[in-house]
Image 1: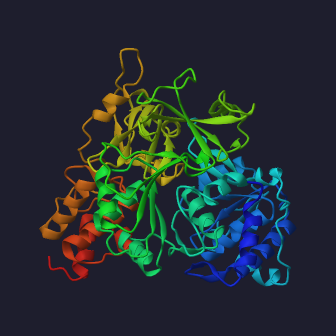
Image 2: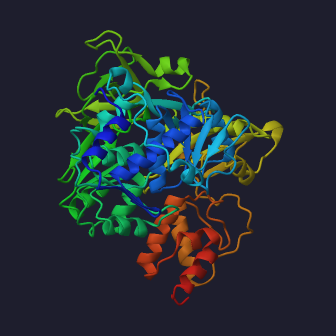
Length: 594
């Protein structure tokens, strides 16, 4: 498609000037207002030295103004780089330096610590009065040529096996192929899309541009951590028709109940393997809703294949389906030969969704984006996903697993090599290995096994604390075990399978001395934590996050407390006193008698 995101949005704004484009806690904007505000901010970016082809970082919470920022970057001819404000400052700085970012757009709450000697931070609200008189800017390079659609629209950073994250450069054409004329979903001006995913996560690509490039409305979920009850209430109240959830959140939403969403037309889920039982419960609970399993690496722009279900799944796994429009797939062996149907092979992606490669990483780009020997046009490439699949008799694909050290945790892609590199960089750590253990719930958790240097036994608690300073929270292992030696296979390699099978039920090291839970409420909360965390002997004063808990698990526990005791516990109350005793006090305060 010979166009750009900003040029196509300008057409939509001209066609639907008075229609609501986006609304959030900070207000609502029509298509005309969004176009004008983004145009003025694009002028400001140009005056600040931003040139076509530059990378501009955007660090902001969920809001209507964050959408203005993204569109303004594109209107300036630049590419946006979404930053997660929850990431450690050291990691954000590493990404900013790696991408050679000179200008950052941020909201007031996220602006601290983003500047530097050669980096300018712009808080658009503070510039609004000065920018108000500027004329709206038209797309900088909006001629509609092939070169326009091949420009980089955004850079998304993913985990790197060497310990350094790598930026994936996604062109405009790849985004347009996903959301314009898509064959896996119908999108039009009557739709209201949920915007819940962080901009740093490529699920936001479908949410934002699926709405705005089809004349629909983008409903921005309230900023901050939402309980699942609050999120589903927002979906119902805002009459959301299209919603995308990570696999983990999808499973928990099904467990809580999806019966009161009359306007939800299409529910998409992905980022990890979906449970057949949960999919079938969702299909039964939402007879008016299409449920789609979406599969795809960031390098092929959100979705490579999809499988939509309106009837129960009768297979052992949920298929990942067939390629979306503008995309092709090949299932090949290790010599790049096609494998027969029913046989496992590695999945390669082709077509318009392919990224340019990794920012300033020609070596690893050449390793993963390889020449396509089956292309009709010489020079075409294919992306080696590293995922093992098999093609079924009906032509759909079944996901088998990874062929390397890459794992998915809570929908985020993690190279275990990056976590190992971070571990072995810590003082007192000689060797380390990281595995992803799948639990009965179907979710995975990262477990690190660490060997101390020269007989030392480093503190597991201190290791996790140090990791939070250099890794995003989803990449910090839920559990760190110190061991004398790592088990080896017969050929001398670390036996990862043996580590995955190890019993990990013992309570990990935490700051609090162990105190057994007292009374009904403390005992009930500690029991819930044991079920979710997989540990025995949780103490009444143990810290949830020291035990390896995370926000998605906290949401699930809050929902379980609601079912058990009929009370609404705020995520803020959970975070202020994250112990069984503290949560028991919150339940008691909400009106439950101990």
